[in-house]
Image (cartoon, rainbow, N blue to C red):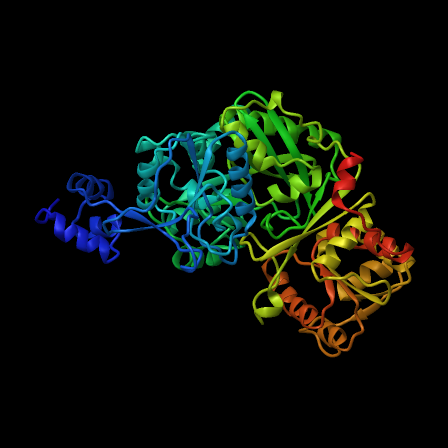
Length: 597
């Protein structure tokens, strides 16, 4: 170190005051690893205290620990073989609790395989931090220092980093460099998936189509890359969770503004720039691999447009609007990527389909937000299966007949949003996750499943009334005409903005023309406030159209009017309303759906 060597007394005092190794490294102009080495040589190590979950009423023996720099250590290490599972860390809007579901299933799998399951997590609202879930719980921050303290104390067989989302995944490389055995996909496979340059090389080698992309470390570089790729572009920092700080930029000004104000640009965190495939269909795949075989849990089709974060998009299992050719390509690309990244455990892949071409958008060799939904839909605990794979089991030794879409029902996931609690925020969806939960509708009939999902999400669909149509020029096609005729056939009155009204009239569909918000009174918002519109179909395209959607969307939320922002969502709504008009929705336990599969 550049400054005078720190002594044992001063170092212990600093640690008792809460200084992390990283902070001390900054103060002494050195590295975190060197501070750690000095601490170890001087014997300045934390001890672990047990939380008294019995309020001193009687002796607490629950294995619930936290670290402190005192003398007595209350954590007793057993002789059993152990596995450590890293949780998802603090919970916040934009980060779902689906990862906690995977962590809990990982704990259950480890215990079933005869391991002592040790959980490290610091969120009191999660199931994984219930003191009786794991064999042992350490309530610690998910930092390299704190995780290593537990690992050194417990000496586990290995550590699972792929169940807690991006937070523990960031620790993979530093843990492996410190000699920790990672269970599952290696840090090399994780880095290839996250490093845009290395991932691009893999895609070119495997001959898998992808949108044009580039990376930038400065505003000037970003402008050059975007000019080469073409607008609109999707921009985001690398290693982000929940689409945080992602944005779609339609021109150079918005890109410059993003780079200057929103991006965390540094040499080790470049901004990723992708060509945004507007008006494309998006698909999610959750799969499990063991290094040899690959099992696809499910292929989900997003109802929302490509570019909407997967945590915010409604999704359908099995996909319902895809050609056999594209479906086969998705399966083939999934297998190729699993082998290319040497995935052991869970993986999630996002695809986009435009003009009958399948493009790869992103691969995450870890648990994804959709794992609980897929598991409940197909009746197989994918996270538990993945954990057993990481502990040495093989897929061929497991009964996985329900995978690969072998069931007769339709399952639909719908996101739940907090917009009614946060007034005047932008309500249209984008690449940054905004939902705070999700619900599921399941039924043999697509329309009934979709109706159930909307009712559960607090967006019940109307059985009668008026429908507003305001669609972009690209959507003035047969799809819009079919939807309009379907609504008219169900007895709904059709109301439309000028361009859409003209399009409907030219094709023989009776409708009432209405002003947009900026065109005069009475306009769309007036009609919504006066209860004259029961459902809205508004498909924005481009930056200006999305600002119009803001006014319409907020009026709809304030007056509890359901709306669709894509033709596929509008088509799903038509099918659901038809099912609602036909009779009451049927209800049966989810286990019965799996029993009949």
